[in-house]
Amino acid sequence: MKKNFFFCIVFLPLLFVFAACSNKVMVFDDLLPEAETVTLYWSGAGSTVRPVSYNGIDVDWKVTGWGVAAIKIPGGNTTIGVEGQTSQGSTTWTWNGYSFTHNFEGGKEYSIHVTGGRITIRNGKSFSRGDIVVTFNPWSR
Image 1: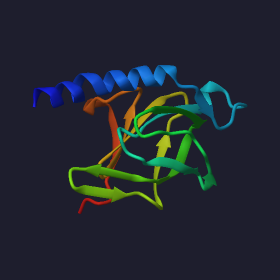
Image 2: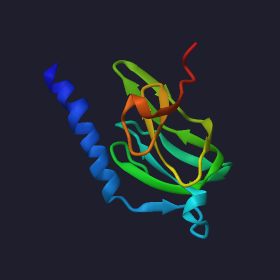
Image 3: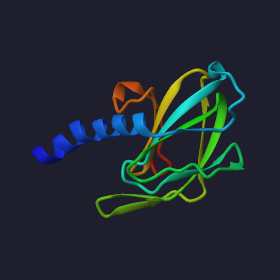
Image 4: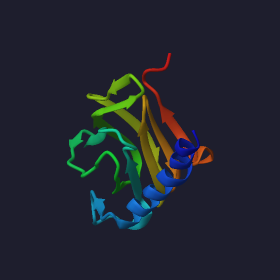
């Protein structure tokens, strides 16, 4: 139990921070000024879920299960389509064909975490519950 607690509370956030610092930022439109763009830090947290479309445009952003991808896109109302799977215990969620929409404020950074049956958007580079902006849970009733 202590080992799992250490892993979740100490190791994963450190892994996220170090990976975010070392990755190259993928830029969707490099002509936009910083104040009009947002940086998304996409963390799969062990899942295979990755973005496959941005506002209806197919994308090939290099997102891996344990890595963190830094993606810079224009701010504003954004729809991101995803594909892949997540698992927790004996439950597996398949995200193929799912999309979520959020109004990202220009000039800010957000973290997107895909765990279990949820996609969570947080302010900044964060794992903190206090920084949660919105959670998408299509399987909740």
